[in-house]
Length: 229
Image (cartoon, rainbow, N blue to C red; front, side, top):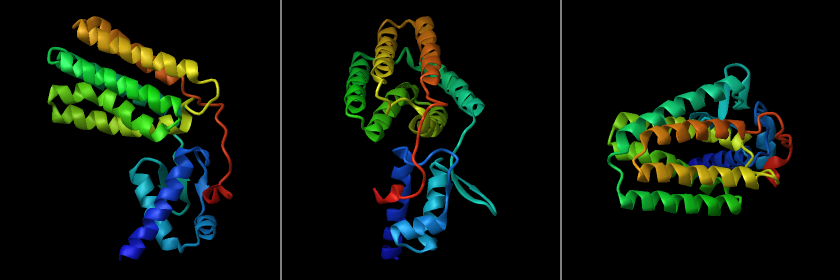
C-alpha cells in the first residue's frame, strides 16, 4: 500500500509541478499513455493523481474524453475577482475595528516576505505568503463562514495566478512593485481606521490584479518531454 501511495505521490507531484511551472498550457489534454511512458509507471497511479489534481482545481476530468489542464474563461476569472472583492470588503468592514498595532506589524512582515519570494521567482512560496496576507482580515473577523469562503476563492484564484500571472515575465518587476505598494496602502488605511479608503483600495487592487494577468500572451511548451526535465 505504501509503495502504491508513493507512486501516486510521485506522479501527482510531477504533473503538478509541470502545470505550476507553466510547462503545460491550459486546456492541454494529459494523455495517460504519454505520462506512463515518461514516468515509467502504470496507468493506475496516473488516474489517482488526476483525481487529486482535479480536487486542487488544476485539472478538469471530462467523462469519456480524459483529463485536461484547467482552462477558465476570461469571464470566469472576472467573476472570481468580483466575488473576491465582495468577500475582502466584508472582511474589511468586520475587522477594521479589531486590528491592533501588532496585527499591522504582522501584515508588514508578510509584505516583506512577499517581496523576497517574488524577487527570487519562487511562485509557490509567493502564493503561500500572498494568501496569508489576504486571509488575515478574514481571520480577524472570527467568522468561520467568511474564512471558509475566502480560503476557497483564494485557492481557486491562485490556480489562475499560476496559469496567467506575469510572475515569470522578464518585464514583470513593475507589476510586482505596484502590487506590494498597494498592500502597503491597505495596511496604512487599516492603521488610520479609514474604511472608505480601505474599500476603495481593495477594489483598485482587484482591478489591477485582473489587468496584470497575462491572459493572451503566455507561452508554454507541449506535454512531450516536460516531465523529464
